Length: 149
Image (cartoon, rainbow, N blue to C red; front, top):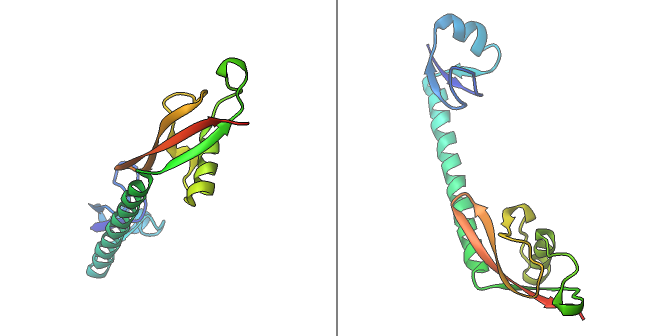
């Protein structure tokens, strides 16, 4: 009997897979425990529509991430930090501070967890921060660090 899996089943397949199992296994385990449904025409059409919808949503998310990356390409964010004698800073600039500055200065919401700093920003200057917006899209944001007066 062919069955469409509604969730991952160990040693059988992943959610959405169409697998061939014995009639007893399907009728006594998979279908009663809501781990799958019989692969009839109606259920196969539902599966096709669901896959098409998921692909459409994934394409929309990718397009939105590419648009946001294009917006961020030429943007700059300015942060100011306390600096002591000899130009040494007190602490470093974190991704949380950068995310807050992006929200205030650019009116964009970017998760601090998506930002990656190659090294700690501990001095005054211009730095580039990589932001992973999507699995296929990475944007670069310019961060200008100035001295707090």
